[in-house]
Amino acid sequence: MKFTDFTEGASDSLRNAGAFAGDLLHPKIRLGVTGLSRSGKTVFITSLVHNLLNDGRLPFFEPWAQGRVRQVYLEPQPNDELPRFNYEEHLDALNSNPPRWPESTKRVSQLRLTIEYDSTSVIKRFLGHSRLSIDILDYPGEWLLDLPLLNKSYETWSKETLANARSELRKPLAEKWLQFTNNCDAQDAQDEQLAIQASKLFKNYLEKCRDDEFALSTIPPGRFLIPGDWEGSPALTFAPLKLPLSQSPKPNSLWSMMARRFQSYQSLIAKPFFRDHFVHLDRQIVLVDALQALNGGPQAVQDLEHVLTEILGCFRTGRHSWLSRLWSKKIERILFAATKADHLHHSSHDRLEAVLEKLMEHALRRARLQGTDVKSLVLSAVRATSEATALEFDPPKSCVIGIPVAGERIGGKKFDGTENIAVFPGDLPGNPEKALTDGFSRPEQDEELYRFIRFRPPDRSSVDGNTFQSIPHIRLDRALQYLLGDRLK
Image (cartoon, rainbow, N blue to C red):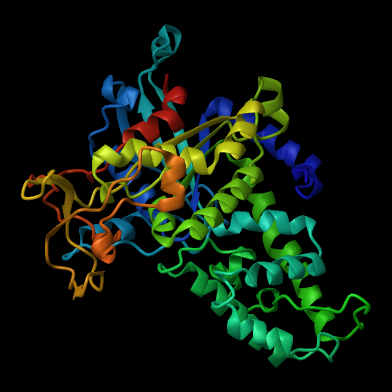
C-alpha cells in the first residue's frame, strides 16, 4: 500500500515545500522515537536531552568530542496541537529518592531541543556559529501496527485475528474471548452492551499476550492497549467476529455495527496519525526490548520478528535529492536499537546486536536495497547496573550488579527495591540463530535463577560510586552520532 493513498498527497507536498523553505532559514530535523510498550522510549528521550544539556559523557558523538558544540537548550513547544514531552517530570522520577522509572508513553508528544555549534565548513564558520533544532516526536510503536489495517476490511481483519488467537501459545490466553465469540451470533441485532463486553474480553486477551511471562508483541488495533485521548470512545469499542461464509451481514446487525466502528477507527484514528505526524519525520529510532522476547521463548521471538518487519514496512524510506526533499518527506536514517544493554555483561553486547540483525534480516536487506540507511545498535539510555566477576565459580562468571525493582523474584526470593545484588544474567550464544531458538545459556538445574530481571534506576551516585552530573548510559553517544552527526558538520 502506498502512503499517497491516504495522506492527501497534494496538500502534503505543499506542507513539505513550506517546511523545506523554513528549514533553509532555521534548519530543523524531525526525529521520531518509537518502540513497543516498555522498550524505553520515555527513558531514552529523557537521558538524551539530559546528557546534552548537562555535559554528558558522549565521546563517540563527534561534534561533542571535537568541542564544536557551543550550547544546547530547550525551546518552547513549537506545535500548538501537540502535547509537550514532559522532560522535567520524567527527570524528577529518575532523580527521586528512591529513584523510579518514568511513566510509559501513552500518546504522541513533542520536544524541541536546539544545538548551537561551530561548523566544519570554513564558509559557515566565517558566517558565525550554526544552529540546528531537533523536534523529537515520541509515539507508541503499537500505533505503527495500525498501518496495515488501512488496507483491510473488517472481515479480513476478523479472520486473521481469530486465526492468530487460535495458535498454540495464544489460545489459552484468548479462551474467554474465543468462547464469547463462538457463542455470539454476528447476525443478531446491534447491541451496545454486547459490543462493550466483546471489546473488553478482546482487550484482556491482548493484555495477557503482553505479560512478561509470554512477552508476545501485541496485534492491531494498536490503540486498544494505548488509547490516548480516544479511551472509551465507540471507535475503540469493537472486536473481531466470525460470520458464516454463506451469509451476508444484515444492515443493523452486531456485525454491521462492529464493521462500522472498525472503519471509524481507520478514518478517525489511524489515518490522521500517519497523515499529521508520521509522514513528516526525517530520522527514526525504533527501540526494541529483545531481552524480554528472548525470555519469553521461541514463539515470543517469532512474534517480535514479525512485528519488527511490519514496523519497518511502515516507513516511507529511500534517499533524498534536494528536489525530492522539496515535495515529499522520506525517512533518511532508521536506527533499530536493542535496549537495556546494562542487564547483560558487556561481553554479550555484540551478540545481542547480532540477534537483532538476525531478527530483521530480510526486512533490513529490503530496506537497504531501496537506498535506506538502516543501522542496528545495542544501548542502554540509563545504565542501572555495574559489572563484576564472580571468582568463586570455575570458570569465573561475568555478573551485573544492581537493585532489582520491587516485586522482582529470583528463585523463591522476592525483592523490595532496596537490596543491591550481583546477578549472572546468562550468556548469549555466539550464533544468533541459536540465540533466537534457545535464548540464554543457563544451567539446567535452576533455570529460573538466571532469568532476566528488571533493575530500578541508579541513585544520584553513579554505578561506579562517583557522583554523576549527567545520566550514565551505554552507547547513547553512538546513537546520537548516527541520528544527528551528519547534520552538525
